[in-house]
Length: 101
Image (cartoon, rainbow, N blue to C red; front, side, top):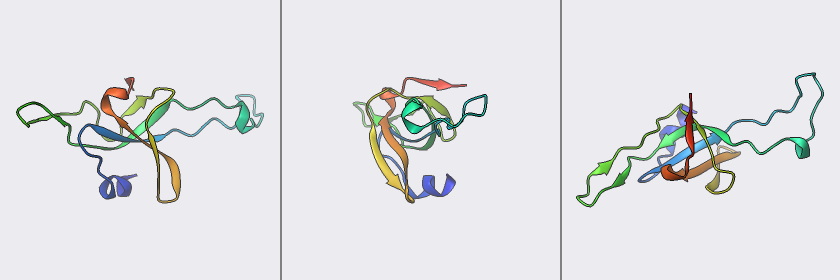
């Protein structure tokens, strides 16, 4: 992830996240088909922009940092593909629902 964060830097208050992998096996060991797995609404922050600007032009810092786990909305964001991996999405910071601790 560190190599992607150095190559890709979001602008303003945008945040690049990588969705967590879907559970492919039940607790009992049964393999689950893709259609049975729920959409993953949790992700890890990979890169963060410098923040939006206020009326004076000064940046407003972003509340999340690289490595934070965040809760995503069900819809929204812009999916992108980096290093042949399509599990990355860009969100505005205000679209993120919560930090997971």
